[in-house]
Image (cartoon, rainbow, N blue to C red; front, side):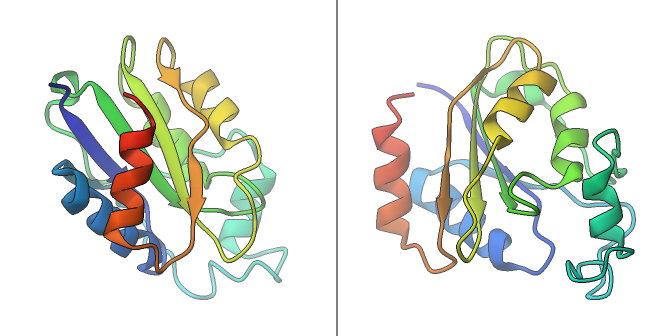
Length: 159
């Protein structure tokens, strides 16, 4: 049986709730990707071109620092990576995470929260950064997705 990790970044708590429900529904370990500098409401103001999140998303080389670390990434076969959609893709901190570990031979499945935006090129970008991993397309969920829906989605992946 494969060992599964549900990792996630959550700026406002929405993705954290979804990731927690997913981990519980599929009996997986849970890991929070914590930024060194926590995002404030001002940082997250997508309508302000000078907000921290806006500046990070314009610079594809931006890699916000992470304070947390998965102790034994080598023990996991499947890594689910959750995040809110920012500017039609994953936040730059997910890029930091994807480059931080050896994912060779592992399966990565992105999942996201968003009111309406799709995942864009998130899976493609993560695949480019997580060298040697098989990255599946993933799915965007509403904030109130049920544990049953999450479990059904995971089981349907065939991993």
